[in-house]
Length: 315
Image (cartoon, rainbow, N blue to C red):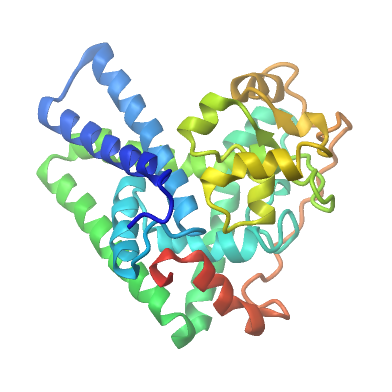
């Protein structure tokens, strides 16, 4: 029933998240253990956000009804309806990477201290994402009715669970659900800054920063290989490492193959902490208003295909 056997790891991560929440809700661990478990839950919920990203590009199961149910499961683990991820991500970011139609372009923040750019990236891009998604829902009408039905279903289930959890015990709900979900949502958006800031969106391979360390890619389902993902968004995550090695590694700038995410974070945001291009040049940011990604000139010809390709509920 799985399209790729590698998604056994995907299912394992989702089960681990559910087990962590259930364990903490039942036992309410305190002290160092309690803090450690909450932090672990935040990380695993972020992994579920990565799964949400993968799911809107490549269906996990061979049956449509199973993909519909799976999207609900992932939405509950990530904390937000993942169908709402499709328009702004697939139709804005992927089609217009780092251009003014990309609501997640990194030029939306421009602090002198680079750490602030990372920290404020999420609030900087969120209004544009919400505006674009709202306009998309309004204009598409019947053309995206299957996507809308799935979005409503996911929303009802996700928010019913959160409201029910708050009603049962608001303290547990905040610690074990709301905080991890906020961290997951923030993290999946903020990682876009790491992957694209200072890169060359016009270059065939130097448009994305890749994190090629084996530990990160095991935990994050190969999402460190971001360049090849932009070239072939529908490529299953288990195939991206090999595709990167064949198509990107021979010609990509060495600075865009980072072997360690922690080391990169320290250098980029702590010391020296300067915002530069991938090849070490001063990065001059030009902040401009968004351009409409919902109705570009080729929307009528492409949008239905893009939504169908991105939504596993329609697979």
